[in-house]
Image 1: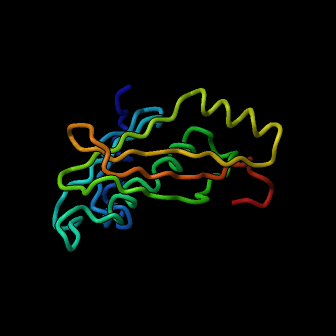
Image 2 (image 1 turned 135 degrees about the vertical axis):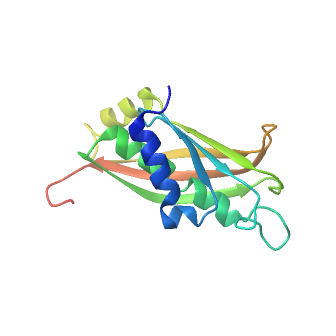
Length: 155
């Protein structure tokens, strides 16, 4: 699916937002339905650590908000989505530009909605691989997100 004008504007705004811009990562694509987002993290003066590889904080920060935004956009305003926890596993040093692709299936959205008809809240775990141009994984970020239906009194 291609980007829409709305998601293209969202991508540009996100990349200009100071907290995200500081990670050194850049969102390169947002599908019109917000079910796929791609991120690029170049090795640059902004992301380089003391030993000359991509700083782990840049890797994590560049993908940190992605699944939360995707779930908020796909579930809609009647749901609350929060980060619960995260881990990062470094597999090899990032000596070149790294890429991440986050995909949320229609089945996953349906499963969350269905489960929330039976329970108050759910935790969902998403793994994000940061890979180089050859497809070699340099780090894996695992995000746990909390989801529940919005209740009266929630903002």
